[in-house]
Length: 46
Image (cartoon, rainbow, N blue to C red; front, side, top):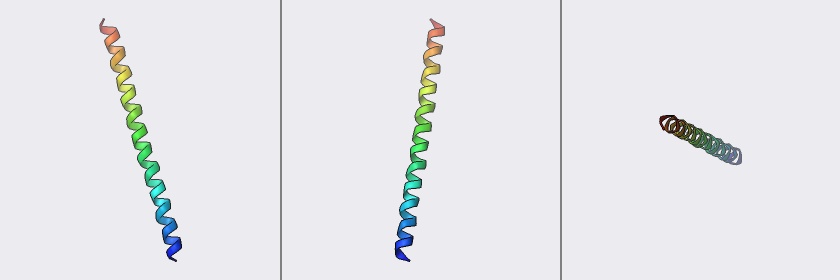
């Protein structure tokens, strides 16, 4: 029984880590998109 519970918890940890990575990647993507928009706005201004 204990082995099964250990496997489940480790799997949950992997899933949680993947979700965290997804959040980080989405944040980076959003930031880069915002940065690109900002740069394009600056180009339009000049």
